[in-house]
Amino acid sequence: MEWIPIAVMAVSFFVLMALGVPIAFAIGIATTGTMLLTIPFVPAAMTMAQRIATGMDSFVLLAIPLFILAGQFMSTGGVARRLVDFAKALVGPLPGGLAIVNIFSSMLFGAISGSAGAAASAIGGVMTKRMTDAGYDRAFCAATNLTAATTGLIIPPSNGFIVYSLAAGGVSIGALFVAGYLPGLLLGLILAGVAFVQSKRNGYPVGERVPFGQVAVAFLHALPSLFLLVLVIGGIILGWFTPTEAAGVAVLYTFLLSTVFYREFSLREIPAILLASARTTSTVMFLVGASIGMSWVMAYIELPQQISRAMLTLTTNPVMLLILINVILLIVGAFMDLTPALLIFTPIFLPIVQPLGIDPIHFGVIMVLNLSIGLCTPPVGSVLFIGASVAEVSMVEVVRPLIPCFVGMIVALALVTAFPALSLWLPTVFGF
Amino acid sequence: MDRIKSLLDRTLETALIVLMAAMALDVIWQIFTRFVLNDPSSWTEELARFLMIWLCTLGAAYGVSQRFHLEMDYFLAKSSGAGRVFMDRVIESFVLLFSAAVMFFGGWCLVSLSYSLGQTSPALGLPLGTVYLSVPVSGALMVFFAIFNLRHPRTVLEPQTLSID
Picture 1: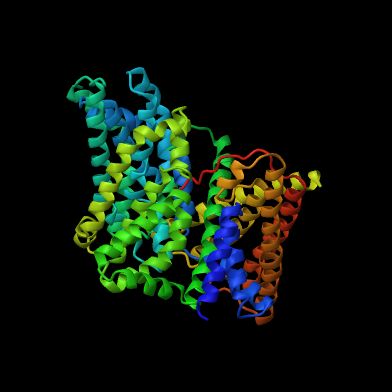
Picture 2: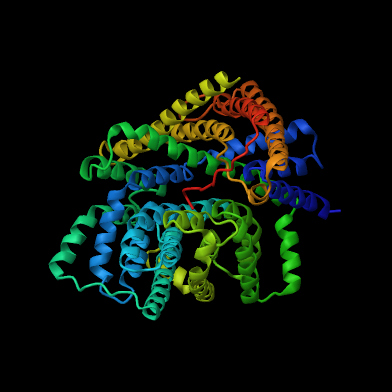
């Protein structure tokens, strides 16, 4: 009766989650309940408590809270404004100029802060007024802004890849970071193409050509923010520091940048920034701890093998299997946020695709890109929510202009899935 | 009970701020000792991990108090009035169940086992029981906050966002 524990775990988890029990607690209860089928209460409770504590006990994972803190230091208006000015000088004169400026600055900000939500709110906060003043439709602004914000999850540094690396059992974070560059740029270019076509059709204004001197000035203003990307990723690639130490450097750099250099906030605001980071950190890490317990029990009851067997009866073709997994993940992503979905589904799907010759780094890029789309889709999409509220439109209004962006994102996902080289070429070049 | 809750909230906030700052400074110190002093510190990595365990378990308890844990509130958002109050109480009962059984009781068993085995950490020589103590402490706080929430069910839902997504 090997399917009984699997049924108990799956049914109790989904019922608890649908009821609205916090996901970490739903995972914990479903996991402990499944253990109780075979072992007594005291060791089951103790094992789960131990898994939660040891799940958080990792120096690699420490990169997440530090990148969160660095992102908080960057989330003041000054960084976003300087990046927007630089993007405007560079790509403003194209048709649909401001929409493309929005996308380009979201890519830069998202990469620096490592968070799509932060990019959507910071860049959206600066761009919505400029775009609507120039005659752009408000819902179109929101759709462009929030989909472009997800590029930041794929362009490194990205917390999504750190979570994946953990759930996948230690895939190199440096390799995943480097692998994200081309897919992230591809996604940004496709979204810019979508905005270009729509802006032409709607007759949105074209920005004036900017003299070279002004471009250079805007670049110099944005340079201190952009330098962080070089420092963090360059340091990891060259082997100067581990991802966790790189995140520590990012904290120190962003702190000095926003307090000493840009003078965006006073030292009195720092406790509030630390508390906000601690909130996000503990939400994520408690989820990580509970998921570590769950994937341990999943392996014990052979859940990945069972799902694998079921899926392999449908098809053994790796391409068909990747398409099937992508469809499942798109549905999952519509209801679940990126981090919990990565933690729960990576230990299930990776053991299925890996024996078929799919590289764990390639699969990580597929998973993060796929689940990023889910962040922009109703009914549950945190970036959709932030993007709509920053642009002051309802989520229902945004859905129409979102559709072409979704098509673009799906095209990017299809290309990244079909061409492993997009993800794997750069890591090979850099010797990972 | 309200007085105790606000006292616990303020204490937790202070603890989280201090732990977060200590963790960041610890990692920065590690980089400093390696690159500037050329004498890498042997204890910073271990200390950072232990600080993180305390930060995240205490933060998780603070999350029960402030209700910032990620949840799927799709059906909860569709409910209203007495139905929502009922659903919210059911949810909090499950939170209470897990906090009491696993975090508090399971955590306590874990702590007493570590102490009786006399396990200590390699670099700092700290008893591991002291590190794991954060789990039952967090569990006890969660139990208190969950009972508080059962007595004060939510009527208004706040939108949730996770700022790393």
